Length: 469
Image (cartoon, rainbow, N blue to C red; front, top):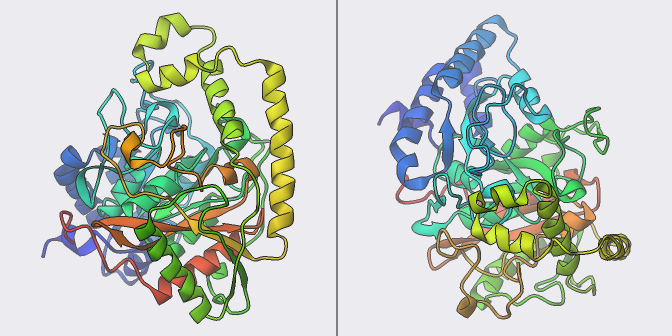
């Protein structure tokens, strides 16, 4: 067995333990991970840019830190950064031909924090242009493929991140989520992903879609995500919406779900879900009961908020290119062009009306969730569709509106609640996810419930057959 195979599917916590015991070194783990990326990325398309030289330099620094007794929380752990997030000295394309060779001269706060804690940045993971859709295809390198089945999408917009983690190309990945962009690829790729409560992880520069966008971890294990959240959470003056909780999220994973009261909604009152997916989700929900939680069939009774989310996204993208639309539109993803052209004439009055409706939606959802510790839903009503498509084919969908295939994710970008997806089985060889939604700022309960489910029905023992350990 090679060094690459030895380390491919070790968790971040396992790596850190091995570094402390001197049974593995950050340099050998980083070299092995980069070799694995070089071997698999040409067909997976998880990375747009691989930072070989800087990654090895960071690994050497982490190795020295372990010798000196100064190692940070993530020292020597390989991870990827989504190509929407600025990284000093590493090309950041944003999946766009508009400025594909941009090399930032600064790090985003999240990147500053993981560097401070000694993480090794492997490179930049694939994303659609400005993160606009649920597949990670773009005009720079094309789509990311699903590690479980070549030719199927890894999801988006953090699809490169999801595929990298699932294929053993680093145990940690940073995603961003404005309508489901952490949870969609995590569910499609069979890994854990959490969209933290809005503002828990600071963003700078601010997202074009403002206060629906969240940054968060994508990992194989729940505790790895909690560890990463411990490193990246907390207020930063550059993000006026950011806040600190003072919570140790890794410690918060302990305790189980006994005594929790959980609402189970298979459809949120309006979604249509594949029967096979629903069966996998219902089996996972029964596991919560076996672990001592009370599960109640309950839906919020609220309408599909897609008109709010869709208008926010479309008008935000239109605003990005307001001043240079004619000059750049031929460089943009054709699907995004259609979204922008449909949104350019939306009035300010209409947008503000929808913002007021959003506030009422949040208040109604908060009241619904008050008697419960969690709301549980399917993460997605379908499995991964063909890579490179903007959305599933019409024939595979119950009705035809944008994002009808991800009806469970965008509502909780509008409310800002923490929402995670956990693997709960397979349909036709492709992963299925279960979504756990917590009260606003109660990320700890989401992590605790997810960790309990992981212990009861462990998913990390199953890996994609084409990406062997």
